[in-house]
Amino acid sequence: TGTSGQVLTSGGVGVAPTFQTAAGGGKVLQVKHSFFTTQSSYTTNAWNDVSGFSITFDSNLTAGSKVYVLLNVMVSTHAGACYGVASWFDVEQGGTRRGDANYGMTSANRDTDNTLGLSSATGNVLFTPSTTTTPTIQVQHKASCGHYLNRLTSSGNASSSSASSITIMEIGA
Image 1 (spheres, rainbow, N blue to C red):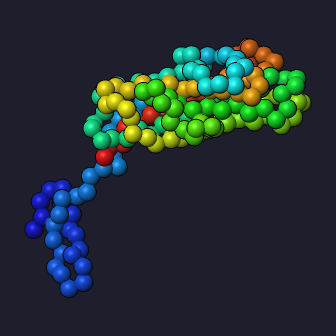
Image 2 (cartoon, rainbow, N blue to C red):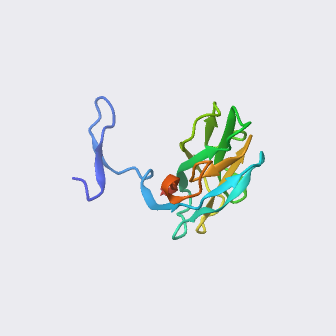
Image 3 (cartoon, one colour):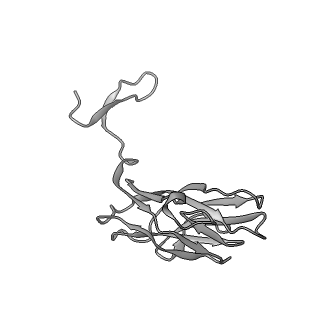
């Protein structure tokens, strides 16, 4: 007979099954979520931190665990000569960007000059952190033309604003 926490495992054809310790790993060990409501604009084509848009785990990570990040950014672009504009977003931890080297985790695009609206740019990434001591995840951005976070290009008032968000999870080894 097995004991608590064990599973019945097949040994193959012609071999009697045995009780084994259940496989570990893949469990969510910590989750943290945060909204970012600051309205801001950016006009750089190099990766930079989004000031104030970061999140830190509440406790140290378990050795060998991974970090899973879900990012949702609300973005609009400058009106005018910004046809075909792209805004890219990524996360950084321990001095290393964690998404694609060129495009980050997600992007938002504007293909016409006559549309106003917020775009939702959503992405995710799984990585091994550079430290297990309460790592901080920092959102970064770059744009081929100017863009706004959490508001329309034509307004800074609350009636046309939104919130971006980030969720981080520690996934056990």
